[in-house]
Image (cartoon, rainbow, N blue to C red):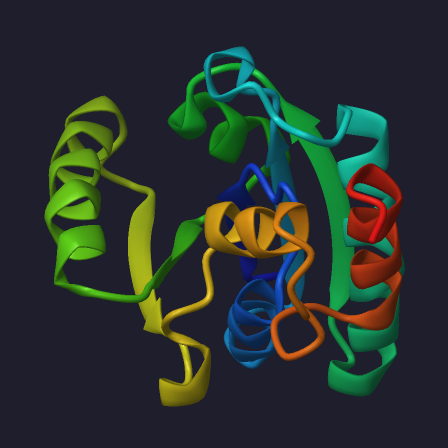
Length: 165
């Protein structure tokens, strides 16, 4: 049986922290679906198309390296419905801090009530990646700081187009 995992997020933009979790997820599954959430409430900086393109570009490099099929899938429905739609047996969530766990713990409980057959797996980012958050990266870029330690060159350039230096 093919093991399929869903790694959902807004990815506005994808960071080295996200990429770290993708690499780890690739060791657990045969197919990884990266669900790019259409979250109108968050008011993303990048359009859905831009976010999908960045995630596709960054994940293409990893697919071959880890011998894992990676598919980028935009979604706007319930996370558990998206997991069912893509045939995922597990939802992969990255954790940075205790605050993340408290929120995720509630979400897991709700998702288990909606579908007990889909398991949530938590992956901790590497210690040097735990502080990276898309929101903070955007703020640093907006204030003309160096975001190179937090994102790939592709994403850095895309952010600097939004916030010229």
